[in-house]
Length: 177
Image (cartoon, rainbow, N blue to C red; front, top):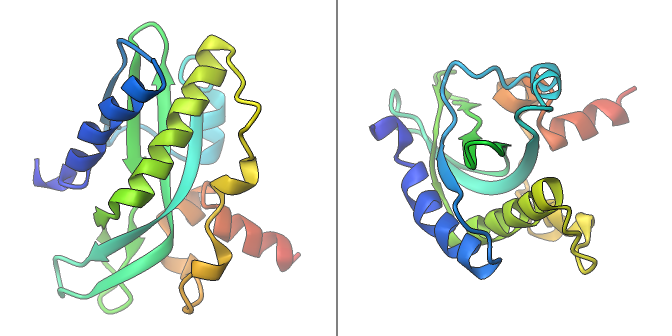
C-alpha cells in the first residue's frame, strides 16, 4: 500500500469537500493500475467513466537514487462512475532526471489538494447532477504562472505528456507547431 501513500491525504480531504458541496454517497479510491490513461482511451470510455484532468503542484522523490524535486505541472486524472458513485484518481508519474526511473508523487501541498478537490466537486455537480456553478472560472483551474517553477517543464520525462493528458506538454506542442 506504500505505492498509494499520496492517496491518504486526498481521501480524508475528499469527504470534507463533498460535505461542503452537499454531495452525498460518493467514495474515492486510487485508479487501478490496469486503467489506460491515454487521452484517447479516456475519451473512449467517457460515457461510462467521465474523466477530468487537473494540474497541481507536487513533490516527487526517487526511491532509487533519492533525488527530490518539485513540479508545478503534476497531472491528476480523475474519473467517476455514477452507478457505483465511485471516483477513481491517479497522479501521473514523472521521470527522475538523475536515474530516469518513473517516480510516483511523494506529496501534494494541502492547499493545492483543497483546490483540486473543489474542482472535482464542481465537476461532479456539473457532470452527474447538471448543476452549473456560475461563479466558476475555468481559468482558475490552470497553474498560477507567477508562482510557477523557474525550471522548464521536463516534457520528455512527463508520463502524462506521453499520454496526451498533461496540459503543459500539450501547450508546448501547440507552440512548436
